Image (tube, rainbow, N blue to C red):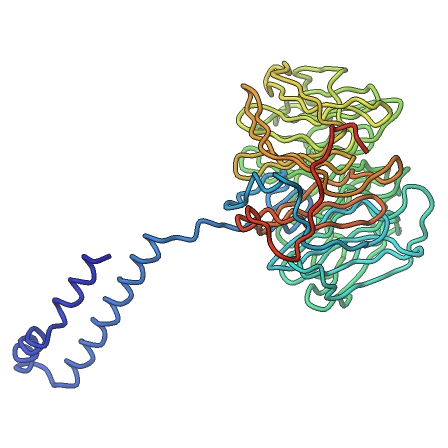
Length: 468
């Protein structure tokens, strides 16, 4: 820094400037020289500030979470600068509110949080200040609740709009600034042809260009994001509960859609069915999202149905089974792929024991297993954030070689009827946790959270994964 300061002072000594003026006065007017001097001075100032920024960068790098399972739809975030030891001594709760029944996760963009819940037989879409929990606006519509109360889907934020889907098939586009409706559509109408599955629609909207893609009809539905009009629809039929996962194969943009008892590969532009594989089971739900790597896809369902690795090609309409394990199953938490390995939240909620497994993606072989309880997980800056159904949050480092716990704490009160089945979200130094009854908690995991702050509420360190 001193080096650049010396250069700056050297070239702007009065004698040097005078020398330049004498030399240039022979060919240019004085006003031209003044302009040149101003340009040179601004250039050196710009250079000086550039070096300062380069030498002293801001180490924190926030990453928005604008849709289900994060910016890339794989539960992985690039956010840096958060504190993996923030749970030591207890979670630091910034705010807590109730948004109504449901399993909707949160989406965060530009300091605002969007989620859904059901209160008094009305679904409510919320916009909150992500740092304070203060309500900015809400949008409500009739949605009578019977079993499994409340919405399952998570809002999608795109280009100043919020897209939501209800369990009974109401698709809304709202203005993100004020919550006013731009358009709405009933995807169970004859125009779209979707049939509500047993537990209601669960797929979150995802976006490809001008298309909103849904797990609806037999193997997918696309609507225009600006009008809600149908672009393409697969044949009428029941759908699954997972959200479509985008992938590219041989230059073509595609989606893996875990439909009703079948996994499908679909051309995003036309809706053409490229390949499929039947996944027949007697009970359970096709809820965890597929994991696609290259021309391979992993799917799994609970209740004794197992997990399988499939391979698809452009020459065969039926995918081939690469490996199958009946004991590898996850119910509500989707698996994550990292560097050749799957991290699978193993188990089903009919049994008390559940684990996190590391599995070789190519062979299906277990690398390690650890007791976590029924859980969901995300991966941020080389670390796993694990939330079990009893509201215990765990930060850990892990690879195929093993794992190391960094910090853990009980962050929200649960019971046999109050559970955390919704995946956690990290955005801009805060983690968001919710229960099925609608308690939504914001936990401070920023670097500043390493010191106790006045006005921040602490919850004590949790017990084992099986504790209530």
